[in-house]
Image (cartoon, rainbow, N blue to C red; front, side, top):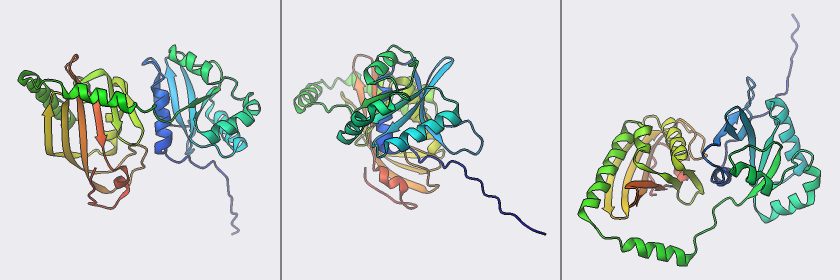
Length: 311
């Protein structure tokens, strides 16, 4: 009996989003009103196709794809890849989100007119439409800094000086402690609604030093959904805590199995043990936390079993 070898070429999968792409998408997210929802790493609707859009922006009955490029190396290859994904994903509009670097700007300036047919709209027009809560009617290019401009040292010193001057009122400290207890209980129960109830509307979750941020209540929900999916058996052990008029600062140990993507890192399937420090800034007016600043060694997530690192 004769045998024939049949080989069929299929598109390869896209690599997981890296920290730079996540930071760039985070900058775009901060330009959007709450009426526009962003989902990241959205698979193409083809069985067996491992490619995914870096993000999708959605409003009721409409959506537009986003590809995030931190460094453009080959303009023609980039355009070809986008064209194939649009064709196969049946997506008619695409935002090419590009990090504002010297090399990217030089390449775009050189090739902008070559890309005009596929991406007719430029940054200013695209952002104007998005900020109005609408999706652009055509594809376009958006160029953004990956990270927010840093606060000047003078502004930062003034802010710290003001916060240091907040009085340590015993009644307010009790309110802060009770809110932190409610937050901790909700986290232990995987109660996202309960967690959101402890947060101010303009809250920000940030992994310090990575450029990764999740903003407002929608962002906080996305953060916790990703966290609980990535570490379904997580257990936090408190090792130290300080409560003051500025908020709560805690040291914890996280022990869990890394079963899902988190903060742009692919799952390892390994048991992890991480030491973290977390700041919960206090909003004196709202009587709620303004989010979390999380200090963590992200590289430790790729380490071996029972690896312990300092945050």
